[in-house]
Image (tube, rainbow, N blue to C red; front, side, top):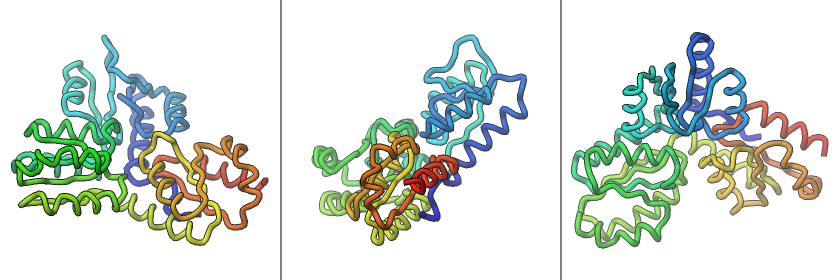
Length: 282
């Protein structure tokens, strides 16, 4: 079992604070715009406590509206305030740093490259913050997209980089190698959070001595899917969301002698324990 599996600091802070807010404000409605974290079990638990997850701000309502751990475009936060909601910002502090670095690059007239998945809420929020100060902000999900911006990069000369907190280090390294010959000034902020780096390194070491790795966590979670991608290059790897998925891999599990387990930053401890208990039955 990887030591750093399960909730990271930012996720734990968001979940515990949200529960505390509802406990201390029983007479008020509490809303979260978008999923607080990428884990359906936690979202269901919050709903059971009366904390509602919504995709759009409710009309003609009031109460407390929580900014999710991934952050949110400033325009959306302003919309919350304008509609009369009491806003509580639970953006992960590491994600906040990425937003600040992207804004800094935009203010300093760098062409801003955000390495990450364009549709991921963390990246959407980072981009929206930087675009308040520049229209030269681009999201780079892979090297092919980067290569398509070659002429833009050459003409701007000054290029700045931030990276989604849950991305892989080798992606950042590949991007830097490609950009060095193209830009006269390259400013790089390695904004992969320490928790992600530690989690990945621990899992890699575990995988080297395992004939099967089990990664537990939501398929929507970026850090969890990256874990599975990294480990699949080292040993046989399966990515599951809960213990119920294990039945699909029963034969593989029974044939394995050394099984390593890790989990994403938004995977609750009880989900991990349930997986371990099910494996022991096999």
